[in-house]
Image (cartoon, rainbow, N blue to C red; front, side):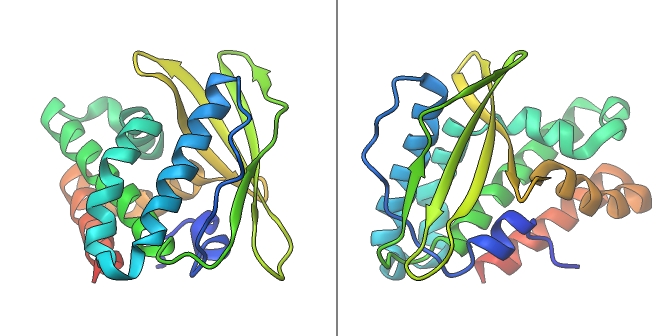
Length: 200
């Protein structure tokens, strides 16, 4: 099974990014801008860093812009409530590595592409919805939607949608088999194997 969600497997493979000038007064949109800027900086050094170097650069960025504990809980689903604290913490660490590895593998060089964050931010209950486009030379724009939620660290990404498909829904589907077969330990091993493949 291909572990990369459609967002990255279909839209971002082999693409690099430039960032449109940051306009954002809205703090949720500004967070998306900060992700784009970090990706751009990493991409410019991408070939010299290699996949593992990009991973090391992006790991702290992922922790800053994504709510990785909340995303892990959503991706695991109902099984989360029956897990020990140690298993939950291990899965958050594994999911965090997977997120960074996925970006490191897919944003590997700069070739003039750019992100454009749209100025209209939608308020939806406790969340804000930030829309952006990946503009690639000679290709139709890729529409991305970020679901943001405010916590102790400010506004953070809790889900990403590509063509209306939730990344977390895709992850939950992928995680279901290992969870059913062997619980938290099997899922952790499944995620670690995916990270190894992305960084090889």
